[in-house]
Every structure is written in structure tokens, then in C-alpha cells.
Length: 294
Image (cartoon, rainbow, N blue to C red; front, side, top):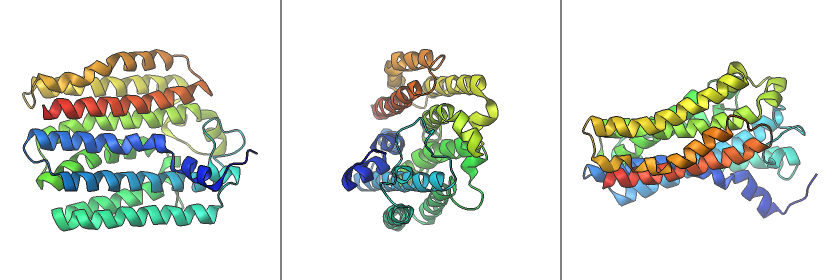
């Protein structure tokens, strides 16, 4: 078992690379708000901070609960997990999880003061979803429902929510803009679960990848990428934004390279595909936000 400093252990537990999944929806929601004259810097920054704290809390929850349920063990192919390695105790991880959720709640109360009770409802649902993904008596991540949750909360929830705290309403453009980001956030989870398909099955973690099987999961990933790139075209065709909304297509070469890798990558090689999918989401999100705002 490798030994790391306490600071490094907590840094690894935070999983900084995953924070792109929380930043991209805020960028896109803010880009849509800018396009329709509703951008507000304060609420946009608060949305980014709240989303990041939620992501960190979810990462801490997954770290400790997957360890306690036996999903994270010595056979794990993904990055090392702090609780499983013994660097951080389960009790410490749970305290940190609740601290992150408390920080997200504080931000949520500020946004509720600005935008009203719908923000409070969304925030409480988001915290419950983050906890119950791997925590509680029947974690839904073990039942194959994680993909749906990620799509809803990182897509419509985060994008439309970011738009709402600035505009106090949600436009048709914001709903459409949520779809590609939800699809790409889900694609990140798909790579993760494809990599862990064998160990998850043995641990009784019946993710959608376990239920679909290897081949269908790879096809599912390609469908999610296709959705992401077709929606900007649909937005332009419907006249909801200018041709600049097609700017995310500049990232298409990276997506095509990923699609090629996903045809044959297995085991540890999928860690690289996981990182590149996260990079694709943030690049796509940045280009999409600029294209919407232009």
C-alpha cells in the first residue's frame, strides 16, 4: 500500500479532474443567459461554487460508501481511492462529505434569497442525489440509475438552474443547451463504469454498463457523443441562436479520436479515455458558452 501525505490524500479524494463536470454546465447556462441579456456575475459565480462543492461532496460520498460496500477493493482498475487505501478513515471522509454539503447548502441559501424557492428545491434534491448515489440502504447507483441522475442533474438541473438564478425564468434556449452537457457528463460516467464492469458485477453494483454489457455500453457512449454534437445544429436550425452556436464542432476531432479509442480500449487503458472525455466536456462547454453568447 502506497503512503502519501495527508494533504495529497485529501487532494486525491477531492478528484479535481471531475470538477470540470460541474463547471461546464455553469459556463453553458451563463452563456445562454448572456445571449438573452440576463447574465448576472454574482449568481453565476455562486452557481459555480455551489456546483463544485456538491461535486466534491459526491466524490467524498462515493469514496467512502463504495469502500464500505466492497466495490472499491484491491482489484480496482481506476485511480486509487483514499478510504480504500487507508489514507483517510471512513469517519473522516463522512465528516468531510457533510462539510462539503453544508457549504453547498450555504451557497444555495444565498441563491434562494436571490431567486426563490425553486433554487432551494433543486439544491436539496441535488444533495440527496449526491448522497444516495452510493449511500443509504438502496443506493441507486447500484441499481443502474446513475446515468439518468447524472444526465438530469448535470444537464437540465445545472444548466437550466444556472440560467434561472440569473434570469428568474428558463428559456427554450436554456433547455436545449442543457442536453449536450448532460450527454457529455453521462459519457464520463459511462467510461468509468465500462472500466469497472467486471469488478462492479462481482461486488453487486449493477450499473447500467453491467446491465447492458460491454458491447452495448460502447455503442451507448457513441450515441451520447452524437447527441452532444447534433443539438447545436438543432438550436441553429430552430433559430434559437446564431451560427456561432456551432462553435463546439471545433472539438469534433477530439470526439472522433475518443470514439476510435472506445472501440478497443479496455482495462487500465480506459483511464486515459476517462480523462479525455472529461477534457472534451469542458472544451465543448467552453466553446458552446462562447457560441451561445456571441
